[in-house]
Image (cartoon, rainbow, N blue to C red):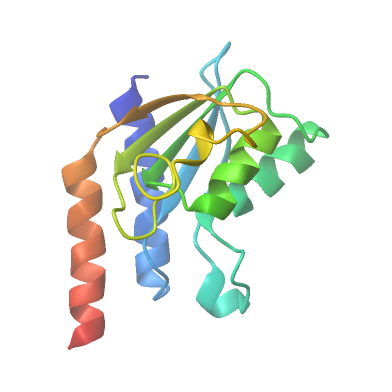
Length: 151
């Protein structure tokens, strides 16, 4: 599979969140050696009453439990929206090797925008970052979600 294929899986997770009236963000973690999907997740902050239940955090918890490890070496995280500061820190602590982002987030993002967490002196581990994979599709889903909220 290619990056677009994995990101399409992350977007399917985002669609699940959309249908549950959650901000539509999805994430997929892939083993770099085998190409197998380790875990998938989406936002669950609203219905879980948990402000930390972002797609990336949910995914890291699932994958760490599945692999019995707090370190997720040799993995790639595909996420439909640029991670916030909390999620960027979690990605760093988990030692995820590569981060692929669909849409950037000028307001809440912390990788390409905002605090640019991975550029900080306090960041312990910086993954390779690629952005813009299926960005239009992710942006359209997010815009549709918030448009529906305003109506």
